[in-house]
Length: 429
Ligand SMILES: [Zn+2]
Image (tube, rainbow, N blue to C red; front, side, top):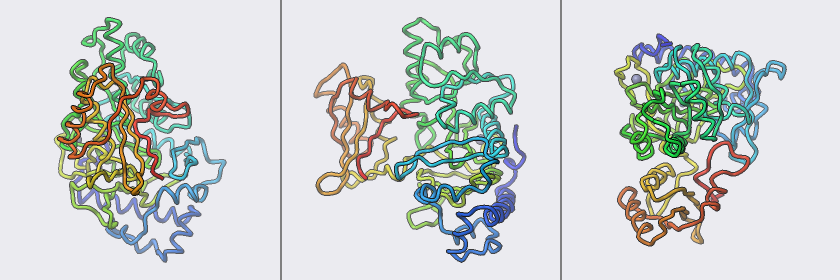
């Protein structure tokens, strides 16, 4: 599956998106209680928005607004809703997302072309290592996408290395869909059980939730560690419930490819204007073709860099680099701007660090403080010093690091209601 629009010139892609934008604005004006009021209050005549540049005339939509006016974003009667999912909100309660039959079809199409970007074909079998329930959109999207491609899927769910290996050996999946750090757990289990990692039949892993690359697209420490023991291809995928769209790498690994028929991308600086190509800014999206809860200029909170120019795979679409961090997780520490993923990368560098959690809080002066708790069998002042030195070398500043117990960190990493492991606890609110 290779949508023809992806090989068109950037100018043709822009014109194509502008047609889709007009349809979306018209749809919002007719069906969205939230945007009807929004257009009225902001004196916006949607017929005047013709070019992608004109989007700048429309104020953005924030996560707080989505949460506060959640029901008003719904464009269809309740009877048209097939699937309900939730995503974490900024104000405590989760935000509800609803999908119609047509939205599920769009989601399936999105995931099918995204998988295809990672080389998945009908002959492949994918092993799903994320949950499909718990009101989670992604797991369902992966299943629908594989089905649309005609590929097979083994739905194992998250965790349980024993069951994962049993399924790998029994069903011979060629692709794994997983949080990349979980691959380290699988490698460890394989070692203990004498499973030969060179003869598993697994070709690649599609990695969700955690970055596997540096900003220059080289493999980060986590990915390097995986590949030393298990030399499979690693593909990054980036998606969110609000976007209902994925950005997957192709085999040239130069960022996640944009699907122009599904979403409009803007990368905005603090001043609300587009940043220059390659600069870090907040990803702001407009969904295309969504029926139940379309979003216009929605600020995702993810800080990214976008790249243009043709890719050797033949696609001319924009590509998103690894997520640098969440805007609200931005830490100003001793005059330096830090994002948690860069700190994870440093901690992952140390084999002696078995697990860790990063806590961020405001100190008495109201500025950010960082406390990193680590667990290691090799408790020593020397290790602490090595970690701090590595922080200074890579990020110019060294936060406080202290030892904790396996149990204490485990309980912080895996809260009972969570769907994903937690590595950052942010007490600043
Ligand atoms: Zn490509």
